[in-house]
Image (cartoon, rainbow, N blue to C red; front, side, top):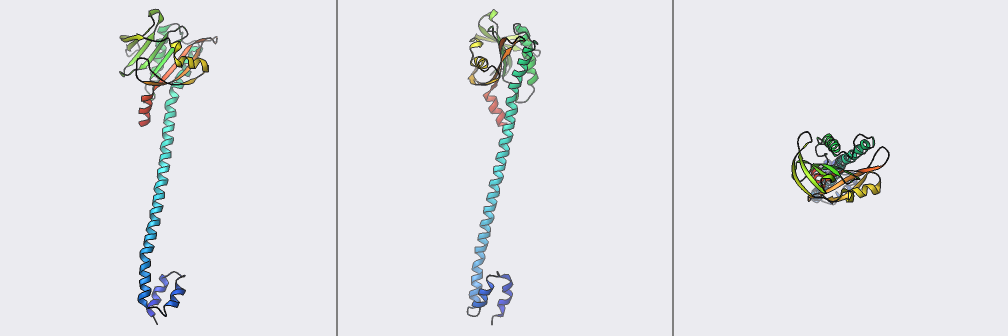
Length: 250
């Protein structure tokens, strides 16, 4: 009765064929075709929606993977950065205990710290801000960068008075020009010194404001013992929080 319907059947879902077989005897071809046409945009819309949702999920999955990967890389770089001051304090403690440096000889301590700083100064973003050795006698020597971004040495020599002298250095670590001098608390009263003695081992000390600066410093500190196991002082390696922020942004 409706021979034109036969070519359409293979295109239709098997579930629709029995239904169309029955209604084709009573319903006109125009009505059937109209129903089929109306199904097309609905099918296309459903397909498009599913494709969009699948694509959206794929983008979310990719963003999650990238965020996780970046987080892992930042964490690893930060670990590499923070290992430097720990290594410095360990090396200093080992060499003092081995008798390789006399803490009562400030000229010897000065040369010792200069060489130590140079060992780590070539690592991009990994160099410490300041390295200090303070002794049980109240003297201290530190080397590093201050806010004027030039390598200096801080010296507190009680034989010269209770003040800290800030010296510019030449390429061999010699003091060449006095930049400034200011009153300085006894290093043995500093929070980092006390924290190291209380811990009796390596310890991270909460950030504190650098004397004579506005910079916040995070430090690793460790007590120093001589060959006989007697306390000789504390070794201090500090990192600027500003440098850490710059490192993370890089």
